[in-house]
Length: 180
Image (cartoon, rainbow, N blue to C red; front, side):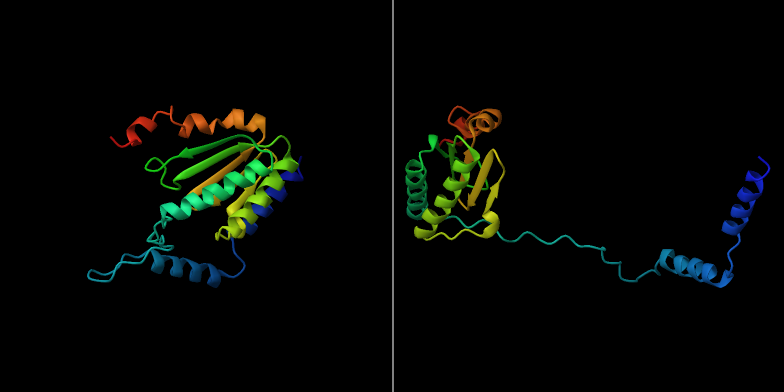
């Protein structure tokens, strides 16, 4: 027990008494300058990390171009034997897209093949996707083609997320978005 007390006091004295007082004084002086209030009339300090202005708005596709992409995507999904293919018009309800396509694939391998074939079909239709436009997991593939967003699900994930209930014709905001 007697040994512990001297160690604690030795450690305490080593911490409280710096070996060279000049560096500590220099740090205190620099801190005081940084914290000191600015003189009246001086320009205000700029924020450390300014937030970039969001000036770029989403460019909408022409209706005939969007229809061409939707047709190419639907044909590709039908050729790949996708199940329960649903096309939803979300114009005016979603600010990120005008059309959603939701389809089901039975296994992960089928989802990946459908995504690859969709990328090729959209490319042939004139839309070359960026590398980060396709996000995939084992149960869900998301393809962001601008005004067209395609969701490919395994059956369990589709039932879990229920995007048709959120964006379909019976969804809460659907009546508000219809013209008339």
